[in-house]
Length: 161
Length: 259
Image (cartoon, rainbow over all chains, first blue to last red; front, side, top):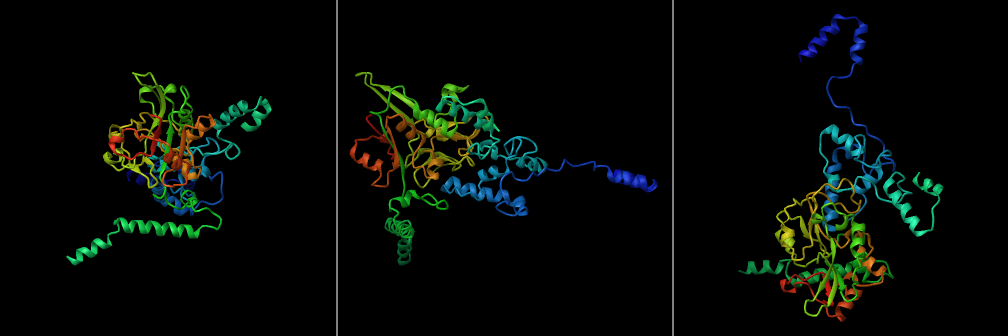
């Protein structure tokens, strides 16, 4: 409060140029705003953005119980499908780096996510579906090398891309 | 008194009523399916939105006479499918998970050797479920005994209660090495799930049984023990089979032949 008053006094006693300077300065407090990147796959989420921002944890919890206890594995509200769309292009994950989809908001809101203690943060699927999953790409080469006689270096480079 | 009697008549848990409700549901399901679809497929070919039902009981028949010495294919297939580190590759072998393990037994008198895989026996009356303080250890309607990791607190009572030493605890962080279909993590108990992710997908077989068949041994047969027409039911009718520790009266989902 004192600081605000002091700032106000300074602002009042300086010229209009100084006003502009004070406005442009970043706010002293607050963590950097979360970087929300658009999903790599898909156009529209299963619900509106506003709904998902407030309620994603509720629908995930409900779906989780149905899946674990009753074996209902529908795609809507499934954590796996969230990851399939929202895995970042850089890391191929939703929670590996600070800018990744889940972590960026959760660290801003200071809410710990437990999901990824057990759940994989990376999408499942073939290389064609997820060109960023470098680990499985590597494995695929191994399999291909075993099945066929030889894989040329060009081919390997092609798949890896 | 008469009121009491009426109440007991209406109790939904009376066996007659249960049987009737079961039959009615089955008929309804049978009527709604497309023509040409065989009736026995109703139970297995469950739609995505449909919950698992006790009309099915998944089970496995292990033919120990066909189980080969030195073969470890079922164990490695399980490890690959479910993403757990095999004992040989583990940094802490004593803590390593063993969803399935190969046992080689020898009769000290006759020197006869028996090979068999040992895993969660998917009891109809599971002791692990009885002792679980949080309800995390549970039996799914189709007979698969699972751990709900969302409620497991890692107390390991179930590990002590299990007569088959089928469960293990994840001691260390897995650092995002899990399979997307098989969540598992630090501080939770885990065991054989009969490849529940594959069953829910409709594969109708487990990774271990597939590997055993692929290796040409055919020692593992997976199927629905409630369906009299299933391969496993037919074999169970023909072969003399045993339950391990049958004296405990747990009604196991895994039956052994040749032990």
